[in-house]
Amino acid sequence: MFPTSTYIERRTQLCKAIGGGQILLLGNQELGMNYASNTYHFRQDSTFLYYTGLDRPGLAVIIDASTGETTVFGEELTMDDIVWTGAMPTIAEMAAKAGIEHAKPSGALAPLLDKSAHFLPPYRHDNLIKISELLSLAISAVKVCASTDLVKAVIAQRSIKTAEEVSEIELAVRITNDIHVAAMLAARPGAREADVHAAVQEVIHRNNTLASFPAIISTDGQILHNHAHHNTLKSGRLLLVDFGAEAPDSHYAGDMTRTFPVDARFTERQKAVYQTVLDSQMAAIGMLRPGLPYKEAHLGAARVVAEGMKSLGLMKGDLDAAVAAGAHALFFPHGLGHMMGLDVHDMEDLGENFVGYGDGFERSAQFGLAFLRMARPLRPGFVVTVEPGIYFIPQLIDQWRSQGLHKDFINYDEVEKFKDFGGIRIEDDYLITEDGARILGGNVPKTIEDVEALRQVALS
Image (cartoon, rainbow, N blue to C red; front, side):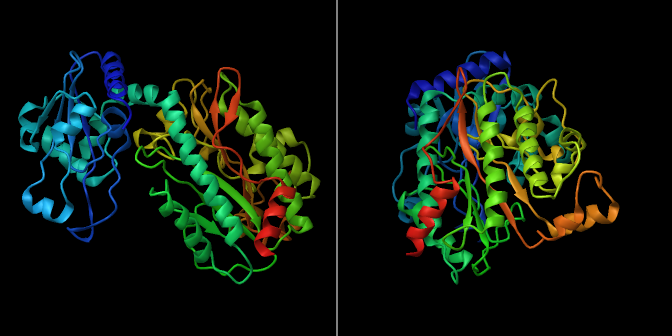
């Protein structure tokens, strides 16, 4: 936990933003995998953690936004519990560390809760049902009745990372660095994706922490979120590794992607595509500064991708017109990045458009650009990922070609030759500063020369 004053100040700011009434914050419950006492690993709700620091199942909090008075509700361990789990601090003892004045049993929550209390939209069904019961709302009405004012206040506050938060994120990213080096050292022809997964999980366990999201470790890098690890690594292929760690105890996230050859060196064709992705990332990074709409950084990266594809003969014509039309999205079909903090996609449970767009920025309906999670102007204290990519998705290529899409900008005969290529993504985490941006957690090899040097060590 952070110092007690941190949580008191966070709740004070939230109360000022809301102005009055009650604020209900629900923690998460333990959930059974196949029966009640065989549970999934517990992960506390991030907003609940942010305002209380209480990392224990089955808790709820009421904050009086007029006075700041806070009460936590939960059940103390019985002796039967202690036999199985060991002794733990009481809820009151834990609450005191967060500056919370009152601790009451769970049964006291409903009688003390105002039916007009502000609450956040639940993303888990157990909490959806709980809110339905507490506030006498139909299940279908719960998310509709969630407080937009509370959502906006939480996002405004959590978006700006303090120095103590940045320190935790950097810890998570440093562990993430080690994960990616381990992956680069473990991969070799004849090994399995599952073997690489085992190597990176060892880093997670050695640091006594959790993954910030399920690992993407795939020679089918053209599948953006591929969580299967069944392929055998083959000479001539690339391996894409997108994975991150949480900081132990605090749960702040790291998120990084590297793509590297299964062999010691890239092929010439792989080098050309890889360098284009790296150039697009560096171009976007060079644009990062307060006030810049992140959409502009995305389009800057997209322009570099289009230039690289034209140099390979895969695109043609006026590249500005091609990017404006979305022709580049055949190769770069996702957004440049997203917010990162207590969640790897920070606060997206509160609504992606609220987090990444806000007033004055509407999501595009154009393929590719529609998947941009973050478009709003950057501010000092934002932590964002920068992760362009180039992918050759056979099914998408076939669909676009059959429909004649963007034929003035795409040389489909040449694109056909790349359908067996896979995909490349490069991702790093950046803090927006007062005058620009800085990388968090150090660097993992990503230039062609540095990646090949580490791969040669791995295969020597």
